Image 1 (cartoon, rainbow, N blue to C red):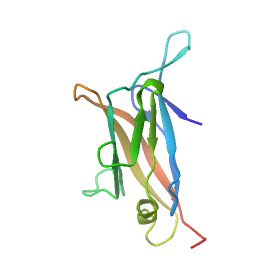
Image 2 (tube, helix red, strand yellow; image 1 turned 60 degrees about the vertical axis):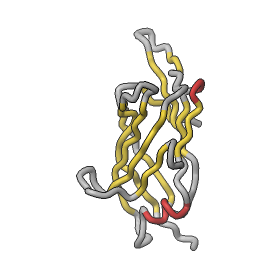
Image 3 (tube, rainbow, N blue to C red; image 1 turned 180 degrees about the vertical axis):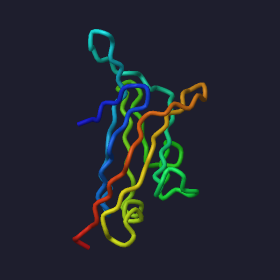
Amino acid sequence: GFTQVTMPASFHILEIDAGSNEAIAFQDVSVDANEVETVNDLTGYQARMQIRRETDSTGYLVYLSTSVGGISIVGNTGTITIQPTVAQTMALAPDNVDVQHVYDLELISPTGDVIPFVWGPVKVRANATR
């Protein structure tokens, strides 16, 4: 299933298991005055995402993008899929305890406009099986 996101940027709690590389998919939709949903075509778009301890932290813990990896976009379906590696999700809980960080995901249009897409806390569950 997809988490459907409508513009402007939507708040969404992201839940990640440390040591997992599970894919998480979002779908960009518009809703008109009659509550009819339309999928937005993201053909030609790029995306980037950072996870930080706090919003004002100087460095990021995880960086994903369509150019360096970890994010894919299927334009005609408006689907954005993030898939951090096992090493990246383990780095989010280095002491193997449940933690919470923050993230945001931005889209970059074909003309270079940066569009906030989704943001919120990242709840990381520690891994009991190692």
